[in-house]
Image (cartoon, rainbow, N blue to C red):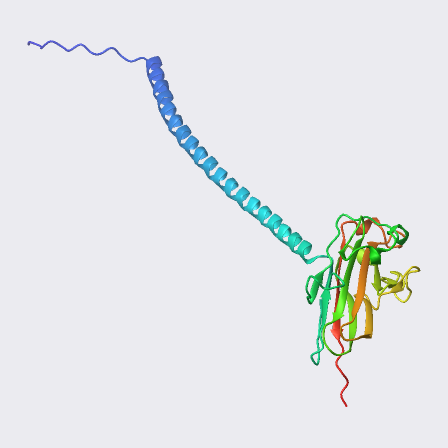
Length: 272
């Protein structure tokens, strides 16, 4: 019986070769897989960093805009305060055709008005009345403030053709850091003067030793039915300072301010 030629069998694969082949496959697969994961993770990290940077930039922009807004507001307020001044003088009510007007000079060459601004003094420190220059009432018309005090001279005229009477009310219109507790207002009228201060902080019924007490916490001074003939003029000088001898003149009032307004009203004639 004839037999065909038998094909040669392939060489058997050893266990070591099988193990080696499996190891190489795992390493290759792991390498490809890790590379893909790393690249994906790296892309996510880059996107997150960009998003975080945008958020921080937006947050910083909001903070900066808010700070700028606060600064602008503070600047506007400070400008308004400066323009308003610390002392204003105004004419209030007029009756029966009787008129009173204000001016910074006795001959009224600059024209008449119903409102004057006495100016403002900044960066003051406490002084005492004895340190004020002598003759402030006759020194100069208009504002003539000095170091650490405000001084303002003006005139009130009856510009009508009939005699009249007027009331005067001098009030605090603003104060900060309790500066009004240590302030002094010296008021001259036709050469006669009087100093006013808020009553003692510890006893509102008691005046300070060197001054007449305010009428109340916000009213510095009042005068009723002051006569003024037709064409006549009254001269006023107002001096303001922080009194160093006042018990309430303490460090806490540093940076404070005081604002005031003097108003003149014509008294209406009694009927009947």
